[in-house]
Image (cartoon, rainbow, N blue to C red):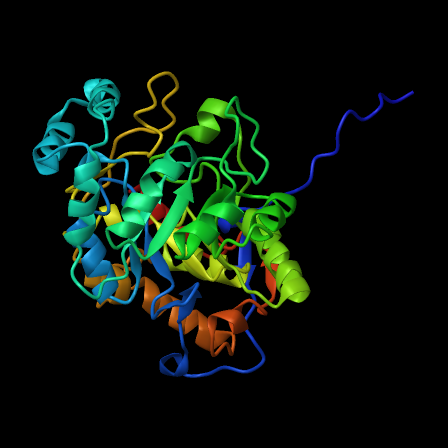
Length: 380
C-alpha cells in the first residue's frame, strides 16, 4: 500500500528551460514599439534599473531617463544616510571580501537623514521621471517627503510583499490609502503568485514587481529556501493582471525583477507576460554605475540575517552599449533592446502586448542543442 501524498508539487520554469516560438508573420525590428507605461508615465524602453546603491545614483537615474528607461533610487541607501555617499561607496568597494558583509551592516546602520532625501531627488535633472524605492516599514514616513521633494513614482519593495501582512503595528501599511494620499503612481513588490498579485492589484497600485531571490547578488533562496523560478512567476502574475483588467478595465504593469542576464532572458520575460523588466547586475556592469564593477544585494546589510552578498561583476561597457549596442560580444549581455526588437520581429509583434501573445514551449535543451563546439570552447 502506497504512502499518502502530503502535498503536490507543481512544475515551474526558469529562463533556461523555455523558449519563444516564432510567429506565423514576421516584421522588421525597426517597426516595433517597445513603449510601456507606469500610471500616466510612458517610457520608450521597457527596462528599469534596480534600486541598488551600486547601480542607481541620482546621476545614473538621469542617464536611464535620457536612454528612455527608468532608474529607481534606493531612498534607504547610502545616498540618504551620508553627506558624502561616494566616499562610503569607495570604502565598500575596497573592503576585503571576508569583511564586506560586516562593513555593509555597519554602513547601513547609520540613520536616514530626512534632509538628504530632497537633496538626492533634486540631483536628478529636471525633466527626469524621478522614481524612489522604500521598504514597507518606512513607507509612511519617507514616501510623503519624497513626493513633496519631487518624486514622480514611489516603489514599495521588500523581498516578499503581500496585501495582508500581519504585524504588531496597530494599523499596517494599506496600499489603497497610500495610493490615494500620495497622488503619484505606486509600484509594489515583490511577489510570485497569482493570488497575491491579484490582491495587490485590487488595492489600486500601478505596477507590480515579480521575483523572489533570483538576482545575482541575492541569497534569499539559499538562506530561506523561498522563491519561484521567474518564467512561472511572471506567467502567474500576468494572469492576475489579465483577470484584473477584465474586471475593471484598469491595466497594471507587470515588471519581472531579477535573474535576467541576457537579451534572451529579457525577451522570455516579456513573452511570459511582463510589460517591462528590472535589472540590477547588468547595469552594475555599466561604466557609469556607481559600484564600479561591484554589486550587492538590497538585503545584504540586514543586521541579523543577511540575504545578499557583494559580488564582483566587472565593467562591460557604457550604458548605451548595454541597452542599444553596438556590441562585439556574442553572449547576449549587450544591446538588450536590440535583442528585444529582433525577437518581436521574429514573432510578428508590433508592441509589447503583442509579444505577450507569442507561444512558448518547455525546452530544457534550448541552450545546449547543437552547441557542443561553443560549450567546449567555453570550458577551454
